[in-house]
Length: 168
Image 1 (cartoon, one colour):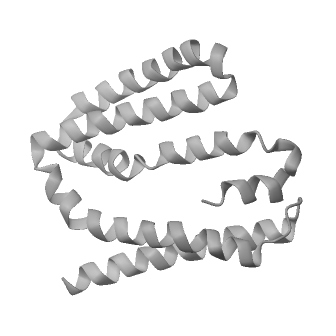
Image 2 (cartoon, rainbow, N blue to C red; image 1 turned 90 degrees about the vertical axis):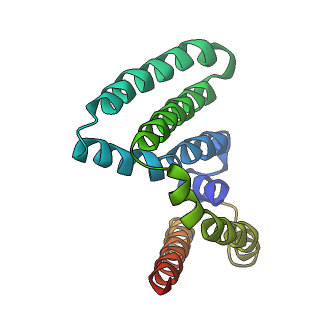
């Protein structure tokens, strides 16, 4: 959401082409909400084959993606390859989790609430950015304020989800 402003405030408008790279890389990190806890679960349940499979498949996806995509897409090809590798790790994690328990149980528990929070953030943050972050030039102060706003938003969202789950 804030990648355009982050890039502009951090390195200036001259690097505006890197906005799409940041957006693709951030999208790839979304899969971490499953892959990281899944790796701990696989270790605890001694299901090492999923860890090994992920350790083999993810780099293969990344390297082959770079080889195939970089000639046509340049640096975006590297970011897309990273997204593909993270997606592959996500699929492996879902398959491994399904051998232990029903992953839909977790998705049902969290998905609706997270979707509502994401929709609210998706529509309110851009409005907030238009009001408070008018300057579109390199600015350390604006970068710090923007990052603080984003961190504050994430923390508030986290506590809203956490508090509502404790009530249930």
